[in-house]
Amino acid sequence: MAIMMNTLLLDESKLSHTQDDAHQAYPETLGRLYTAHYRHVLQVCRRFFRRPEDAEDAAAEVFMKLRTVLRQKDETRPFRPWVTQVAWRHCIDKLRTMKLEKAASVEGVEVAELADRATQSPLSQVLEIEEQQRMQKILNTLPEHHRTPLILRYYKDMSYSEIARKLNRGLPAVKCMIFRAKNQLRRNLLLTAS
Image (cartoon, rainbow, N blue to C red):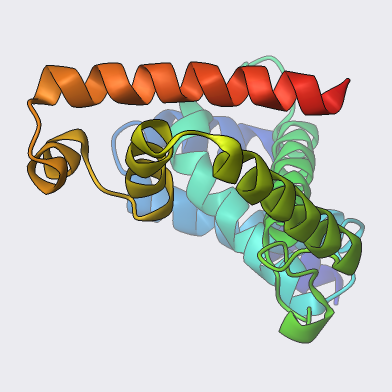
């Protein structure tokens, strides 16, 4: 067992040589670092993740990350505490990402449980019906030349040019008719509100 542990762990002199080689021969160097430190990095990752497969994924990702961060290592610091810190930071970042993804997903939520914002509440429906009835009553008090353009525009959803053709009028005349009709409607609404 002791022989196995010695072969798995690189001593500091070999490690500094390995780090120098990292700039020239990444695959071999990363392979040696992986063999020597994977179990330690995995133990660090297991402290953060409950599921073993999440910890294993994170440990593998740490070694993938070493390709970019190995050049940033301070040569005076020992390797194991440094790689522990890299693993620790990576696991925290991964947990934050997982938390954001979980918050953004709707997995496990039944569609029937979600509130349907498209349908109005019964009270809102009653109030809207009452408001429509009130508006129709006030619209009926308008003279025919004011009521017709408003009905065509807001109840039939016709454009100004369509109204002009329907009433056999010019476009400026229709715009003026609708403007005057809306002003008259506003006055009537204010009179009934007070």
